[in-house]
Image 1 (cartoon, protein in one colour):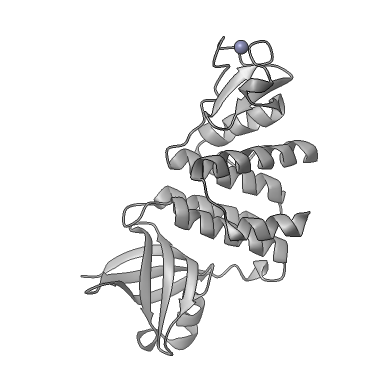
Image 2: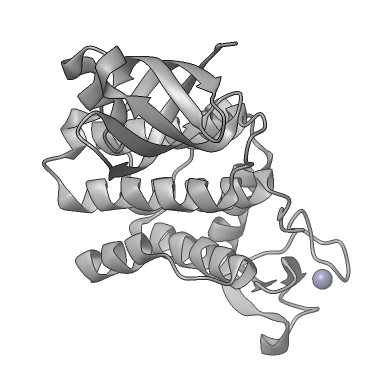
Length: 246
Ligand SMILES: [Zn+2]
């Protein structure tokens, strides 16, 4: 029986001339690997539907040992990203992250919407890259059960001023009176507020905030450290992106 859903290609690997294997982040099945039967889908459609960052309406069925994409109607191919290596590599990092974090073979609508919004914003180039990166990293962590406990100081319940100490291992926060360097890294209050915004806002509003350029860089560094500390692995695409923006 066919299932209709929509999904983004987060990894592509070519196989034979007719078939391709892709990893998809889908709304209804989460992360899946699937064969795309070239013969069944008109050639031009099949190409854009099966390349990295191709977002399509999909008809999928479960074969004997794999999912098979029966039909794909491309909605977005994010062509505008191809001309900018920084933005493209950041989008590829988001894909690699989604492949690591998003659920497998179960509903993942929020993950898909987050990644699509992030890639849209990257393509439009209307929001700073560190902002898009920080929101995507921290919100993905929240969705997958790693929401930091940053509403207030863990000791006194105060909301802090100037700066607070954020502990990336525990995800806890300490105000400047209760904390010391042993409690975590000093983090500007603007960055703390942005993190609260990212964790708590409704999905439509998570990218809507402003911070100085320096603040955004600090924010993106904090969310990256928090993510890497908890996932305990490296991301090739992140290493590549970091080299580019050095
Ligand atoms: Zn305190």
